[in-house]
Length: 141
Image (cartoon, rainbow, N blue to C red; front, side):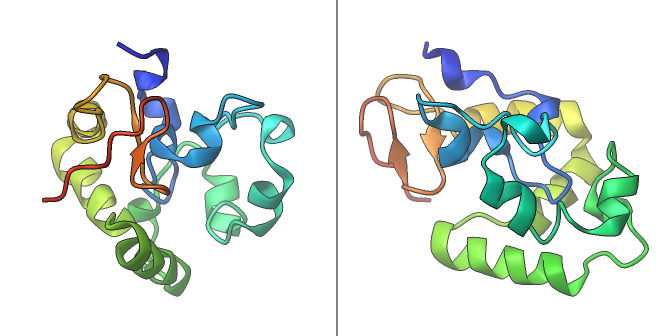
């Protein structure tokens, strides 16, 4: 199995994004450590432009998730969710609901299965719709 199949709780962003399936995390050259990783190791555009990561509530409640906020779901999260549902077929709000309802360990386990490449066992990339290791397309529902 490919080494990039390691999906763990530290790779689940406050917005519900599974950073393990992000193109920036999966790239071979200077992979992003994920939203909860060291800001110094992240691409500058992610640190400066992410509307969720730069939310004052998220920055002060670093260990939490957006669904724990009094303003959930805020307009920032709704906009991000709409973009990801439209472009990539993935919903942050659905992910957050699963984290809340199933618990983080069960959600992470579900993500491992959901994003496992049927071709090589690596991780499918949400942003390109295929496995970056072998090129197998992401299965449709």
